[in-house]
Amino acid sequence: MKINIPNLDKVETGREPVPAGKYLVKITAGDVKATVAGDSKYIAWQGTIQEGESKGRILFWNTSLKENALWNLKGMLVAAKVDMAADGFATEDALGKNIYVLADLGEYNGKPKNEVKASYYPVS
Image (cartoon, one colour):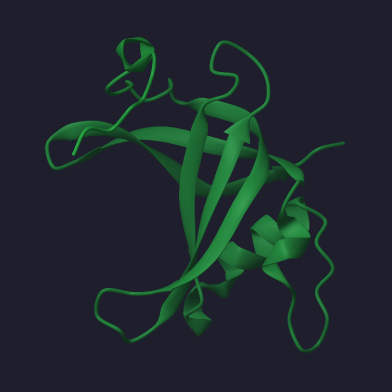
């Protein structure tokens, strides 16, 4: 079957990670997923860099829903100024919010990749 996609020759095949640093990102996705072991869940977040040479690039990070790791999720929600009620919050409330994240360089399957550290900063 032929797939007709014009201008595929202009599409990059892979990108190098962005340099380590602090980035202003707009949160664009937050999907709840099960861990591989199936013993817990986490939220897979995605944010688009809003300024600088890496503007438009996407960063990915996870926040665990395990009780001993909720500090990380709360830190991100506080930075994003998401309302948290006694019964929880809606991931949708984080979408469109701007926060600063600290990205570092790591490795996955022998290739460099970005890792967002558990460091989130509010936008003034």
